[in-house]
Amino acid sequence: MTRKSFDMQLNELCEKLSSMGHFVVDMLGEAMKAVLSGNIELAERVVAMDDTVDDMDLDIENLCVQMLARQQPLGSDLRLIVTTLKVISDLERIGDYAEDIAKITPIVVGKDMSQLFKDIPELGHMAMEMIRKAVKAFIERDVELAHNVCKDDAPVDRLFRHILASSISYIRSNPQDAEAGVYTVLLARRLERTADHATNIAERVHYLVTGKLVQLAKFYRET
Image (cartoon, rainbow, N blue to C red; front, top):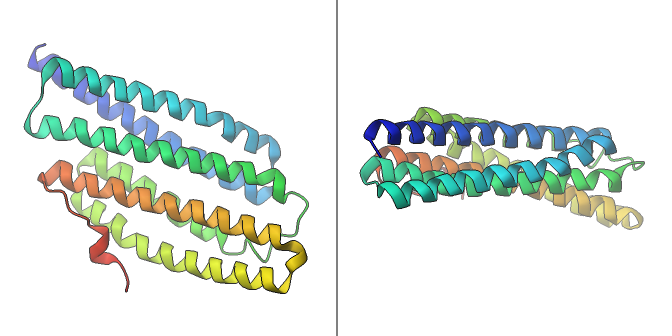
């Protein structure tokens, strides 16, 4: 394989990962729309989207394996391929979380979730912004943006803890409606974990650019 051909494959790899990243962000956004509006038809479409994410994941992984086997890359080329394998794992997991969120939709339809869900849209927005920025940081090799993603994780954690405390208080006051409180916690937890995967991607961007594996998130973690 010539260097030119290999560079074309590297570019293809980045394009595929970018497409997967944007697809996952859109999927998460649709899942949030479905659960907040009680749109079961939209929720079913989101669930079906997970198959596409899995196909993207497998396609990119196969390309990475082929490039490793045929080219035996070194240095920055090797870092790009290894980083891509890690990033698609995070994106695939976020797709699973979006599917989980969509599956909550039929459970909460017909229930008054206004009190329990009042902070969920903000948490969803914060998580999606982190994923958008993390994917952008990868595509543009932007270490500063990667640091910003990790900084954003602390506010997500704060809001998650607030939602958790509010949900527990709600369950105690409304034991007859405990299921709604439990599913609110589950939804918030999926969004909080989505943000964690965004920080994983950001940390891999730092590795991709600098060659150093660093847990960036711990520098911004609140005590």
